[in-house]
Image (cartoon, rainbow, N blue to C red; front, top):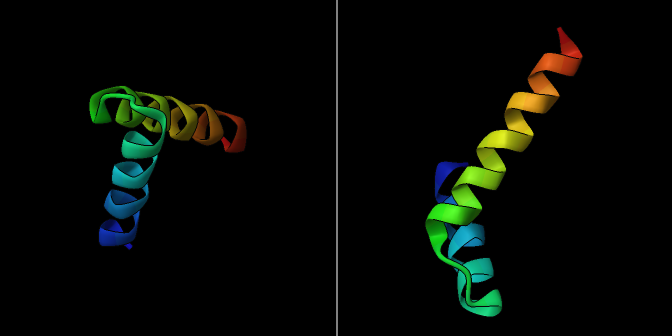
Length: 39
């Protein structure tokens, strides 16, 4: 699964011309929000 996430991040980064770090930050934020809502 980790390889799949990295592949998706890389693809989005290339397609949208965004830095990978920004995509990881957005993903981290989304996961944190989802976790808070579940708890």
